[in-house]
Length: 102
Image 1 (cartoon, rainbow, N blue to C red):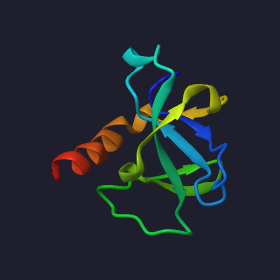
Image 2: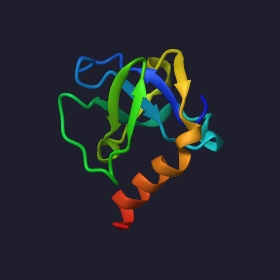
Image 3: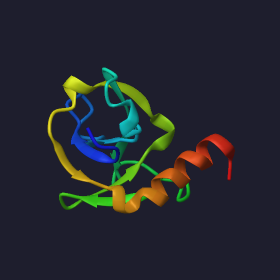
Image 4: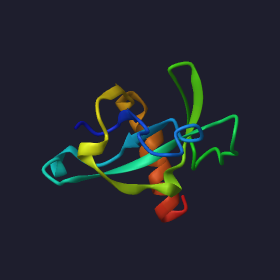
């Protein structure tokens, strides 16, 4: 399960959170859980620019709600839709901003 893979949200809030982004290092692949952050429908919630980078996935505008990262069972994630590793710097900057404030 590569870092920065995007998965359809199999949970009950899929209308608000259509996707989950795997932010966990590939070095920890043997673990049974993955650290994921919700990709929230941008038409239904507000984002903070440095904390919540925006993406377009399957014609839906979403933003990364990094402050809501959570462990998720890897077996429940299903198949990856795409990988956002080309946006790695923005994603890691959001994590740094959440943790360090800069």
